[in-house]
Image 1 (cartoon, rainbow, N blue to C red):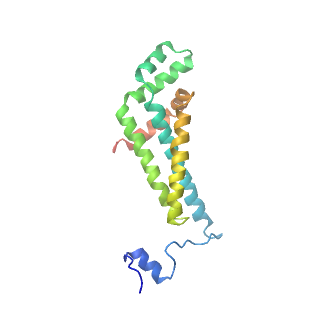
Image 2: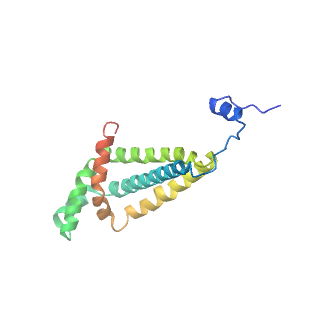
Length: 171
């Protein structure tokens, strides 16, 4: 007597091939590209999540009034230019927030999909949660709100503007 298993097409297909539910092919030279591709896409998802989380903390913690003050009375010309670059972004607070949260959630949701293709599902979940927690949230938040906050944020402002344009229809 077999235990009840929901009869979805994937389970039926795997049963017909007599494969265990968590079977993954052994890497060979013929499917190395598959593993490399999915591994790189997973790494890209972690990098995008890190960028989005860091920029969310770094940009949204900047006060527009402080940026205006730094534009007028900044210690250096570089600081004045950085404040000017960032003020336009920070003034669009809602659009900036929604754009960065969309980017972060897309990267975080796509990560386990790529990992699931190269490791068993339970490992994909554990890996994605761990990678996102440390490399996609904690470390970027510390870096982007550190002493070089304005420098990093102003260097990445063109990237943020491009993402805002790309995601504007749904943001």
